[in-house]
Length: 111
Length: 115
Image (tube, rainbow over all chains, first blue to last red):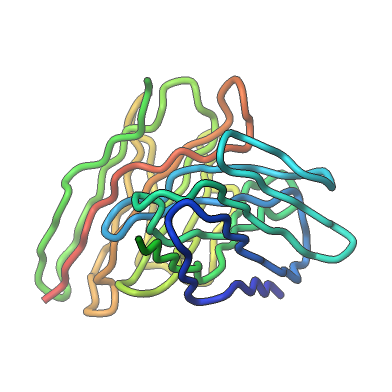
């Protein structure tokens, strides 16, 4: 089966750093995505990790540990526009490109 | 920058009616998907499509649903007899182009309201 867990909500202060965690238990694994979704809009791609370690892209970094079934998204220098839901999603193995999404973490950035 | 487009942006229909949701994936992409998101809930995978056939589908994607790539650019999702619980945002996505092969690009979505 598929099980992806992430906190429901988080609050952080403008200019600060926030880490959003995701744990997963899936029947197959071919990588993990992080997406950002503003209310009423489509998800937009942030990162894709398939190997263990940290991937940095500007203010956003994503970490993966396959042995622990764990990932996190790190957002630095938070801006008000970063208030959104952050979706952790697992790409299943087998080459069929099925993605299973977590329920998302709603991040509120406050002044 | 190339993008996935979807039409219509909002569709209102009566229960029992057929609807067709349309998508134009990014032109050099190989994989196409439909997802749905019921208001306030998570994004759910419906189906993936590759090489002109369904490659994987979820348990949600029952006989009421079908997908088609009628020409070289469009990708459609048909719901034969809509139910109230089909009301949701439907997202099309595509992947498999050059660059990040697994990155899925989402369209803006079609909001389906079944009355």
